Amino acid sequence: MRGHGYDALVGVAGCDKSLPGMMMAMLRLNVPSVFIYGGSILPGRLDGKDLTVQDVFEAVGQFSAGAISEERLCQVEQHACPGDGACGGQFTANTMAMVSEAIGLALPLSSALPAAYLDRDQFARASGEAVMRLIENNIRPRDICTRKAFENAAVVIAASGGSTNGGLHLPAMAHECGIEFTLRDFAEICARTPYIADLKPGGRFVAKDMGEAGGTPMLLKTLLEGGYLHGDVMTVTGKTLAENVADVRWRDDQEVIRPVSNPLSPTGGVVGLWGSLAPDGCITKVAGLKHTRHRGPARVFDGEDACFAAVTARDYKEGDVLVIRYEGPKGGPGMREMLATTAALYGQGVENIALITDGRFSGATRGLCIGHVGPEAAAGGPIALVKDGDIITIDADAGTIELEVDPIELEHRAHLLAQEPPRQTNYQTGAIWKFAQGVGPAHLGAVTHPGAKAETHVYADL
Image (cartoon, rainbow, N blue to C red):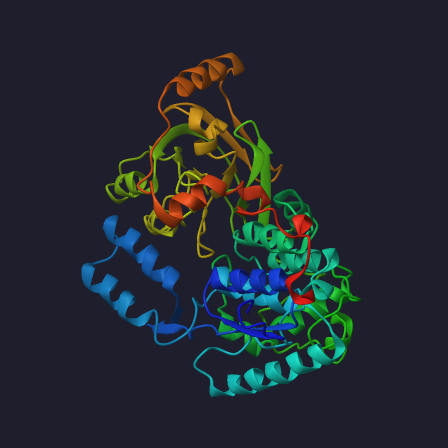
């Protein structure tokens, strides 16, 4: 874009991180831009039930627990992903696709149709027409993505039981606009937003069902009428969000989206926690979760691989708090997701257990799984000081997470840790090494540069 001095951008993205990545590029460049989602996968079918990739990961856990046969595992594996498109539940891709509409960068309803539907072509054409109008009217991404727009995006993530990765991506996107929008801001909005879209992994329905129920515009209209959204924000249509959904009507023939007066739960599907184990905060998804409080002994693993091996071998006890550290932005480096481990646990049918990490989770994760613990272990956070057997208390209802160890003992451990040589990763040269040197904390978006606040000029003004 910069090399060729292009006037505008239509960006297509198809899975998880490519969606916020594309929107970050639009905000950094600040040329007239329209986002379009590549589309969700259609659900697989087995024994008359919908399947998603989440079912495959959980089947691995069921197989390791002896609950299903290898033949059954293969059946699930062969039926879960029938074609093109991003993972089919309200996991990270579909969460961020909804964000693209809610924040105003994508055309209304453009994220609703599955990737396999040829009707999606009409949205591609319409996006091209829309970007030409944006050029004419000089409407740019930062005119659209205001503080109010980021608040709307957080509301939609909470109301849909969306991915915890939203708490990482929205701060990173806001950083490109020069707007401070932290994990705490995100969590405060989630705490006052009703959870109303009954979507997997916490609920019953997949993305295709959401589209057939009216898609993001139906959800936006319901939340707007309930007083949860700012309707006066600009969008890529050249109209406000309220104007975009003015003609959307509630449909009684669908079960996916509930009225705000009858939510699945009165607060959002995602919760932030703070306490002695996470002074900078952490995040968990509570959508569809009954087990929201836990107190138990720590079982500590330096890296996900060791924990996955223990879970696969069922080398843990009910009541444990599994701690995976050195998987944060610096320590990973890069915060890989813990879906294999969390899904294996869930598939084994263990409920009285919790998992904590300074890494992050897939949007398909369910169970009491807490990510983004900050400061991370590689930055000397309290999670680096935890030992096997330490008692950890989690209360997702109160938003707290505490390490029950005497502060003097923690000081002693910190002193000993400081005497040790820094923990080495496998990346001691090249681009990933560079990333690890510059990356910031997760609660601010794990960004690697000063952002729009430090700009001396905007590229688009050259």
